[in-house]
Image 1 (tube, helix red, strand yellow):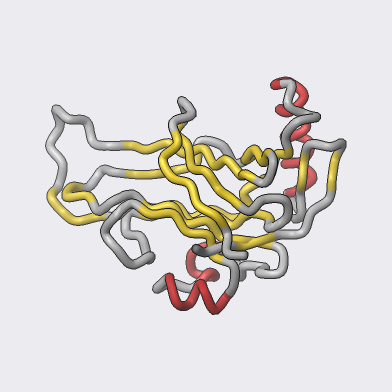
Image 2 (image 1 turned 180 degrees about the vertical axis):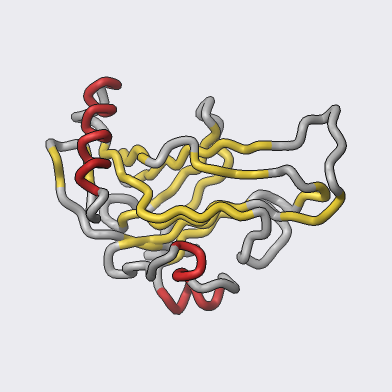
Length: 179
């Protein structure tokens, strides 16, 4: 599979952060973890960079999940460069990149996006909550092939497995980083 990573620091025992915006994310994450009672059991990991698209640069037509570990792996799997997707380079020594793609769709209007920019990490499993939007069944949609996907750069430390879930907790995909 494919992966990415980022440097970390701890705020209490619950939050990791690594960039200029990381301090604000850390404070927000700590507040959320305290409010939800998860401060001692889980670590909240912020999404470092996010790109959602209707045309996934990952080859294939089926629903898939990948964890990208390196620049070489990125180049062999994706047809776009990181700077064009994220507006910056991926820091491979500190980040993994998670790619979650829906199966090919025959109409426009399908979309996948993060439902939170903070992910729970527990016992080496990173949970990435997403929201899937589909065209209303009673509405007309343009006929065109699309393959919606989400590409997210996440801190490398602490997790080996990623689980993509819908808001209600239903697991859509699960995969592990290469060892």
